[in-house]
Length: 274
Image 1: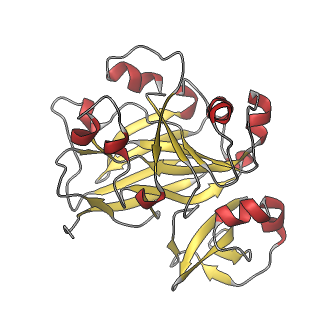
Image 2: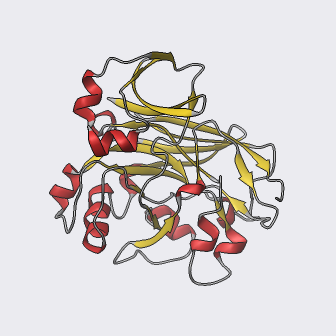
């Protein structure tokens, strides 16, 4: 099953996806659905219907309580950045203000000249979980989405802490849907394209710490709640690691997709300083 959050005028609605039709579930977003209903409720909902081909996607969870991100978690990306394989996950956070929908613009802030792409598989938590062994952690996963951890490299590397390069407002597309675990092929690949040019392609099984391992590890530190998000890291092919380095510029289109889930298509635009 696939779930999405649509913008409907001034409101949003969690929907069940049936081909090109979206069926309202009675919840404001997928996060609320997971907290108060769950996929079983969504499966039988029979609300208003909408045409997905003309719908406007919001971030699939509009305001997650937590967005935890894993850095340096694909073997090929670790090697391209000249680092050793980690013993433990490298974690940082984002805030909900960073999230945009599957077709929204990515804002390029005037303060940064080194804005990079990082296509990622995102995990959405479905049940409250704390100190979970791997199998219980796996059972706590409601599903998966696509995310691009667009990164302001000049700010990221100002210090050893990455947060300041990772959570700029309106920078992180997230969606288009939550796909339940059975929808994700075992050989799924993550692909990122810039203006139609493929810049990243990696099987998601190249992860050092997979989805269940990350849920287990993070839940040891903090209780995970329904709707919380874990971004699992990016593979090789980022612009910053290229020679010469490449970065996003206004007018370029960033496409990010994962087999079995769908794709994000986002145009980069110059943010107007407020």
